[in-house]
Amino acid sequence: MARQTANSEDQTVRLLKVGERVRHVISEILTRQQVHDDTLNATTVSVTEVRMSSDLRQAKIFVKPLLGDDEEVVLQALRRNTAYLQREVAKRIGLKFAPKLKFVGDESFDEASRIDRLLADPRVSRDLGEDEE
Image 1: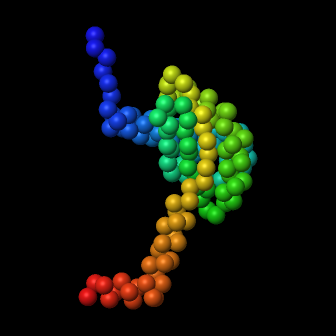
Image 2: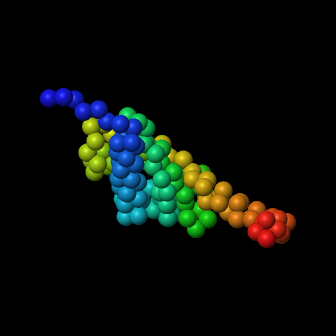
Image 3: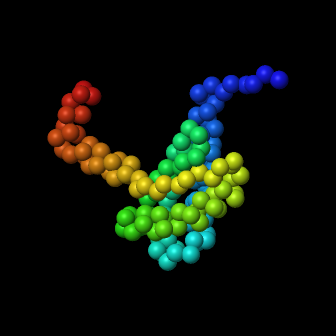
């Protein structure tokens, strides 16, 4: 039987699917407060994105604490509980290898707010208005 070779598009789709499954598992664990950590149970954490390495052995998990909670405190709590979360991801997803989880803060919301503030600036609005005419 001939060995099938996967093109880069198939690998990308697979990485996205696995990343999305990891995101759902982590989100479910955090929402159901299945982690025995007071900081995480008292905080609502949004898992915004998961980027998998090409070999599926590492997952970079972007998180954003909601309601103005301190991001660094939440990241430290997640890092303290990484071993438990890795075990749960491995059990629920069933990959050959459990991906190593790395939690980072998601700065995309802050960047979007900064761009909105820039666009709301009267000087920028004036310049944009002149271009449209």
